[in-house]
Length: 221
Image 1 (tube, rainbow, N blue to C red):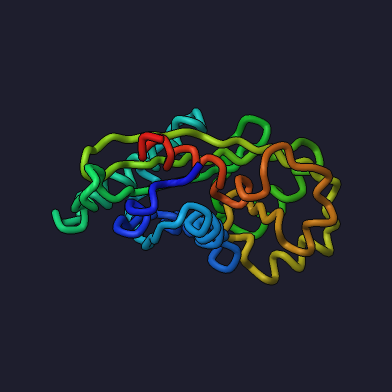
Image 2 (cartoon, helix red, strand yellow):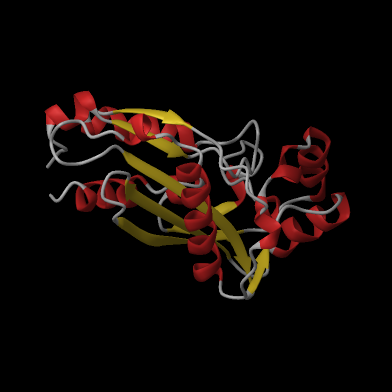
């Protein structure tokens, strides 16, 4: 199953896949979008929403990431002119894809660490209980305004991560930009991942299967 080729050639998917910027050197959303775009034969561009994410709060992580994805969608649409939303001639406008993700540990929503000690505490704790990533994806048909959204959840189980490894992660600094200090794909962390209940791409911030599902729904397939 694939998106119509005429739609794929003429339409441009404007994807807010980098707006969160949780890990500047470990952000895999564009890589994941490249794979999905190749599979379905469409082009896409990347925009940032530039919203105040701290102003949007919710105790339920599912509702929080959906609210953030909706706010990003609203913000990007508000800055687009009519030509950018123009139809490809097949009755459907280009799609706008927005997403967000948080890490949940023992029922607590973890955001980016405030300092190195908090980051160290986050990473130490993952040996005691699994961490979960909760990620939303929203797909909006920019001509009709119809929206399709869903949430992907993965659980990551760890063995204890040695203090020496944590020291190196903190020295590199990238973990400070990640929700919960979580970097499951880092070579120093990989040996301590026991298993992932879910998908690697979902943990990294964008589920390929969920993106494909919503695109197909939006395309009426």
